[in-house]
Length: 274
Image (cartoon, rainbow, N blue to C red; front, top):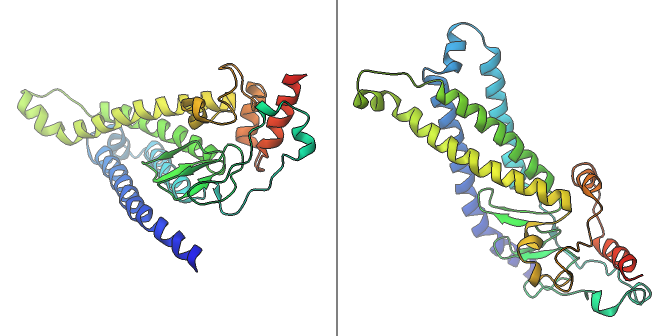
């Protein structure tokens, strides 16, 4: 009963904030889509000519981006709900130098044994396997189970935003005066401003996450390497989880099973110490 009540109390404020964030995302997405369809843009011109392929494809792309948003926002990112199995036995620990073997640690917040690459998220109230970061825009952590969905969402979102930018630009036309031009295009100008800013942000995010995925590194490990127990004693060039760009990307996008990172760490540390 205590565990259940603690879980509810921890999740309740996150749910409330997440509800507002998801509602804002939905309203903003469909408001901009409505502006692009109602204004004199390429979409409306295609509708007036009876050419419905482009408007339908754009509409379906927006729907797909919204569905992926809710998928990555609502799915379990890899919460640690019970003690992680200790895979570093005495025999394997003796194979590599003691200084390079990170001891299994117990989380100071949820009091569970953390698997390697996990970190406690104060916002979610849980430790997350292969923790990357907590994203306020999706009101959820990005971790082992939803990281690839997050990257897929960013890819679809970027394609949607770039297409929306092109559509918005097609709706501007010259008028007699500046005041009249602003009055005619005020909503389209607002939509273009929002789409332009989000396009730049999503482009940067997508590039960063693809770069980190190619190295088998997380945002937390990259930004706070000096604080991570299993990385702080290594040089900047060393990454015990790096298997090469192609293998890293294949594992990130195509391998669905949970990885036991302790075994990978021990194997690579053993090879480096030989």
